[in-house]
Image 1 (cartoon, rainbow, N blue to C red):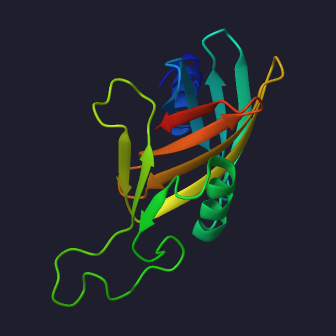
Image 2 (image 1 turned 180 degrees about the vertical axis):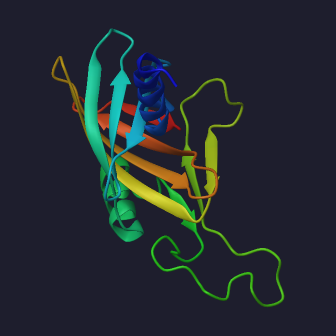
Length: 174
């Protein structure tokens, strides 16, 4: 291989190995924001969201325990704003699930609300085992957001909700 072709090939491989995933946010009044995230190390990651007015919000997310997540989520959005079924297998799965007499292991499920008007139903569901993230975002024009995300370890997709400093709520799909 020629030496001049090696540098672009190496750059391409490094760029592809840093997977960036997309997310979308929808406000209660129909405003849509788009964003992206990528994983970092030690159960953390980076998020960047672009507002419809051009503001860019950046932040980090970190993995948290289910009980911590649910408590914070309900403190922010109200009691009963999220429903999670099945035992918490996010940290300690059951070694015998799916092993004896069943071809399917029992999985967690979470139900939340979406403000995305493209959906005919305002409820979203994700099945797991589930992971739970919290994030704080800071905008270049002073907007701040507290965010909560639930995702499936099977599919990598999920949903969440954010609240900005003025009390506006946004649903998130990733």
